[in-house]
Amino acid sequence: MDLPASRGRWRRRSARSHLPVVVAVLVLLLPTLLLFSSAYSTMLRALLPFTSSASGGGGVPQCGGSVELGGERFLWYAPHSGFSNQVGELRNAAVAAALLNRTLVVPPVLDHHAVVLGSCPKFRVTDPASLRAAVWDHAMQLLREGRYVSMGDIVDLSPIKSMVRTIDFRVFVSLWCGVDMRNTCFSGLCCAVSGGSSMPADYNRCRALLSGLGGSEKGCVYPVQDDCRTTVWTYQQNNDGALDQFQPDEELKRRKKISYVRRRRDIYKVLGPGSQAEDATLLAFGTLFSGPYKGSESYFDIHESPKDQRIQSLQEKIEFLPFAPEIMAAGREFAKNKIKEPFLCAQLRLLDGQFKNHWKATFSALKEKLKAVELEMKRNKNSGPVHMFIMTDLPPANWTKTYLANVAKDERYKLYTLKESDELVVQTAQRLMAAEHGVQSGFLPKTIENRKKDCDTVQLPEILLYVEESVCSCASLGFVGTSGSTIAGSIGTMRKNNVCKW
View (spheres, rainbow, N blue to C red):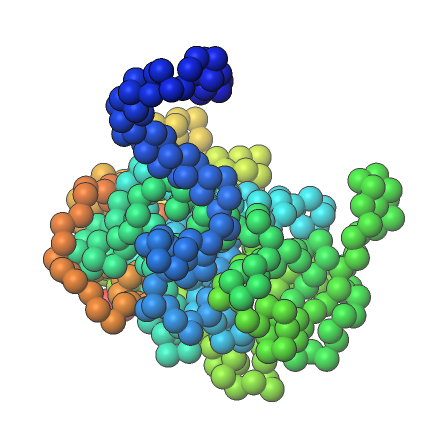
């Protein structure tokens, strides 16, 4: 408002008589006008994230800001919910990336339920674009708070390295969007390959590109909008377009006023060669989480590929992805040097979600397991106490008046627990982050300057859960877990694969 008013005042006077004054004022205002112009330009770039930069302007191009990525095509997805669900999505994403010949962008570990999908069986889920935007926003929160850790830092991706190309999310957005991700780094290599601009407009543009909120960009981004309400992805099942077995019932359609129809779609035919998605540098999914439901799968039904030996081999490999070597070693060390005896592991999930309403069933399962172990020890003429490692989300201070309190006081049992602040856990986190598995395991620029570059201080990740699971994999007297818990399922898979050897 001030600028037009000023121009009006100047027009009411004689331009000829006041020309020297006008020139003097313009000279004085020139720095301010240039500053305003720069800020205005930045604001426009933030509001219009798909505006292309001029070829000679020195800005980051609209789609891909580094020649290092030339010719590569990528697959990105939006993980959500708890860690075990995120690992399941990572496995499905690896299969999709291999099928579509794309490089998998490996995301960060998200805080528990920081991003929520909703319910596929109830046809009430967050749409893919909003889900991708939520993942970006949470990743930026982790960056600001210095709490970023990659899934590739925690999960050992080496078993699939020869079958699936990967790139760490930090490296990808730094090269592709030209944004600065160094505040997510713990060690020098990550800092050397994650630099870029720290302008808010560049982050905003990258958010719009990865989320697909601005729609599809030919040759740049193909945002997959099909979710579990309409689609079940398959491969080589000769049923592309067929109705899925699970559909919304008539009561749900009437009550929720929905008209969804779920169809089985062949992922290679829909998103592979010859499709609209083929030429896009980035193929962006929403969730890739899936689970069995009423004789079908909620979203991703690609579990075996007998006609494609390469994919079949990959599926066998990803059935179990171990934790990083440092985490597995910490579990073995605690079992060998702290417990020292054959022991039972009890995983008791008591506070989260539905599990807080099932204490009785959870403790009942523990009682039965303890009875069975004690009988076995008597048969083997072992009169010592039952050594038991407890992993639970119920703090020891709150064990009072619970079955855990009774067990803790009973001389027949010797209990062991771990805390995030324990020396073993802290030292493992330090070794883990120094190893930089997430960055090391994937695509890196051919030219890397100053690998020993110092990083700003970031927090060590919270890895207690992963170390606890590793300890439980070593429990030679058996394992009892909380029914329905994905953590219990993860431990069961580790034990099935005999990962603990000491």
